[in-house]
Image (cartoon, rainbow, N blue to C red; front, side, top):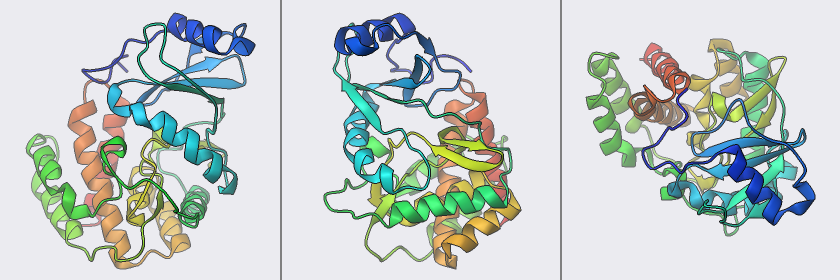
Length: 296
C-alpha cells in the first residue's frame, strides 16, 4: 500500500510522533514509537511501547473526529460487547503537526477472514444492537465529518451515480445501477435516529479464531438510519455469516435493502478512489459490489 492515500495528506513520521508524545506526555516519553503494520484511511497509527497506540488524522477533514471519539467513546465504550479504542489522552497541535491527536490502548487481533462465518455474523449483530440501544441525548447527527453516514439513502444519489460513471469496463455498471435504484427506493427509516458506527468494514474490525475481538475507528460515529450499520453483511461476511447477522438483528426487508444500498454506494465510491493507493481496500470494495450483485 502506498504511504499516502489522499492528495491533501499531512506528512507524519515516527520522529514527529516521538516529539509530540515526549513534549506533551512525559510519562510516555521513554516508550518506543514505530508505525503500525495496519493503519486507517483517515488516521495514521503508531505503536507506543507495547500497550499503547497513537492516532493522528491524515488530513484536516478528519480533524473533528478526535474530539468526537474522546467525548463519546468514554460513554459508549463500556456498554459495548467488545473492546473499542477509548482515548486515554488527547494531544494538541505541535512539532509541525497542525491537528489534535490521541493516545489509546493498543487492541490486538487479526483482520477478519475473507468471508466471515456464523460466529462473526452473530458477534457483529451483538455489537450493532448494543450500540443502537445507547441513549442519544446530544448525539451528533450525520455531517461532513462522518462522510454523511446515516442520512437517508436517496441523498447519496449524485455521488453514487458519479462513481458508477468512473467504473465503466471495470464492473457490471448496468447491474450495479439497477441494484442501486432498487435499494435507494426502499421504504425510508421512519423511527428515531440511533447510534451508528458508520464504517464497519474489514479494516476497522479485529478478530480471534473467527470471532469479533475489537471494533476500531469511530470517526463516522453519529445518530441516523440504523441500516447504515448493515454494511458488513456484504463487506465482511460470507453467505452463512450474512444470514446469521440478519437473523440476529431481525432486519426486515426494508432495512436490509437500505443496508445493501449503503454497502453498494460506499463500495462504488471506494473502488476508484483507492484503486491505486490502497489495493486491499479497493479489493474489499469489489468483494462488496459482487456480493450485492448476487442479490440482484
